[in-house]
Image (tube, rainbow, N blue to C red; front, side, top):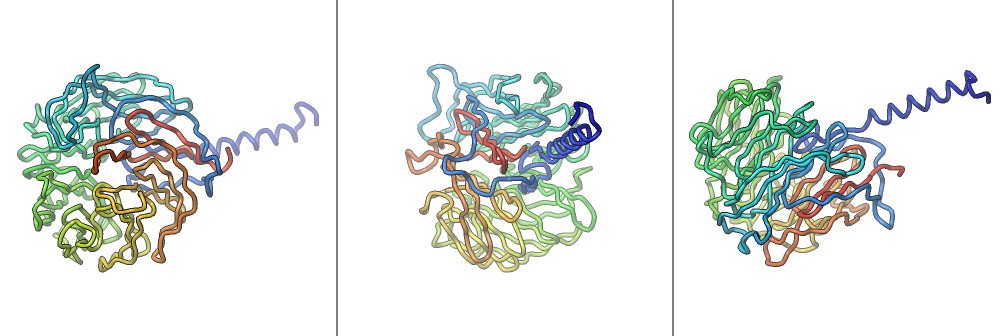
Amino acid sequence: MRANSPIRLLVLGMLAWLGAQSAALADDWPQWLGPRRDAIWRESGIIEKFPKEGPKIRWRQKIGEGYAGPAVAAGKVYITDRVLPDGVSNPKNAFGRSRVKGNERVLCLDEATGNILWKHEYDCPYAVSYGSGPRCTPLVDGDRVYTVGTMGDLLCLDTKDGKVLWSKNFPKDYKAEVPMWGFAGHPLLEGDLLICLVSGEGSVAVAFDKMTGKEAWRALSASQPGYAPPTIIEVAGKRQLIIWHPQSVNCLDPKTGTVHWSFPFIGRKKDMLGAGMSIPTPRQDGDLLFLTCFYDGSLMLKLNGTEKPTQVWRSKSRSEQPDGTDALHCVMNTPFIKDGFIYGVCSYGELRCIKEDTGKRIWESFKPIVGESMRWGNAFLVPQGDRVFLFNEGGDLIIARLTPKGYEEISRANILTPTNTMAPPAGRRVIWSHPAFANRCCYARNDREIVCVSLAAEN
C-alpha cells in the first residue's frame, strides 16, 4: 500500500476517529458521587474481573492524611489533605477535641502521571474528633475548584495554578460552631449558586454566587448542621433542594432558599454522641425519598410536589446494635435503589438488601467488609452496568452483583493499605474515603498516598 494511497488515508482516518470516540467516552468524576451526583459509574469498556496479579497500578503519589475523596476533571486530579508540623501528633483518643496545629492543603495532580502540578496550603489548627484531615470531596466547575475544609474554610481556586479567587470562613463569617466531626457536607453546585452546609442562626444552608462568593441566600436554623450533603431532587418537573439536618429533612427552592416543607427525622432516639449524625446522602426514586442514619435507622417518604410529604414507613429499631435493628442503619455509606430494592451497609458492616416499599429485610452479608460484625464497618457502593464496584475499609476493590437473591462476588483485589487507626476497636486500620471512578480507572487514597488503578478491559 503506497504511503499516501486513498485506502491508507481512509484507514488512518478511521483509526483516528475511533481513538477520538474512545477518548470521548471517558467520563470525569468532578464532585461527590460523580458527574450526576448519584454514585453511578457510566463508562463502558471496564474489566470483567481482576487478573491474578491484581489490576494495573498506573501511579502512586504521596499525600497527607484525610477522609476527603478525590475529584477528577479535564486531565487533573484534585485532593485535599492535612500535614502536621514535626513533633505534633493527633490525640490518642479519637473523640478528643484538643487543639492541634497543622496545615490543610489542596493538591492538583496530573491525571496521567500523578505528579503534583500545584498546591495551596493554609494554616488550620484542628479541634475536632477524628481529626485526620479534610472530609469534603473537591468540586470542579470549568476553570474553578471549590473545597470545604474541616474547620470551615470554603475556597474557590483557579484550576490553572491554585490561586485563591475568593474564600469564606464559616465560624468567622457566620458565627458557625464547628461540628464535633468538622464540616463534612460536600458542596453542591446548582446553576450559578454554590450551596453549602454552614450552621449558625438561620444559616444551616447558605448559597453563594459561584463566581464572586457573594451570599445569595441563607436558610434554616438547627442546633447543629449535621453532615449530610445538600442534595437536588426533581419532583413534578421542579428542581428541589433537600437539606437534612439533625432535627428534620427539609425541602427548599434552590434559587431562593424558600422552605417548602420540613419533616422531623432524628430525635425519636437520643443521639448518644451529641454529634448530630445525619450523614448519608438522601436517595430519590421517583416520588419516594429514602433517608438512613446510624441510631434511628430508615425513613421512607412519599413526595407530593412542594407540599409536605407523607411517611410510607419508618424503622422501629430498639438500638443501633445488629440484633436491635431493622431496615438500614447506615453510618457513612450511600445506599442505592434498584428495581424496588435498597442496598446499603448497616451499622456493624452488614451489607443488606431491603424492600423499598416496606423496609423488610431480604438478606445480609458480612463478606464484603471484614467478614464479621464490626462497629461502623464500611464499604462504598458504585453501580456500573449490571454490577457494583465496592471499595471497603480494608482497601479491597470488589466487583459483585447485588440482587434480591443475594450477594455474588465476582472478583476482589487489594489496591491500598488502610492506615487510619481512629476506628474502634483500638488498632483497627481503615480507609473511610470515597474513591473516584473516571477514565476507566479507580482513584483512591489513604492517609499516606493516592493511587490510580486502571480498570480498562484492555491494558
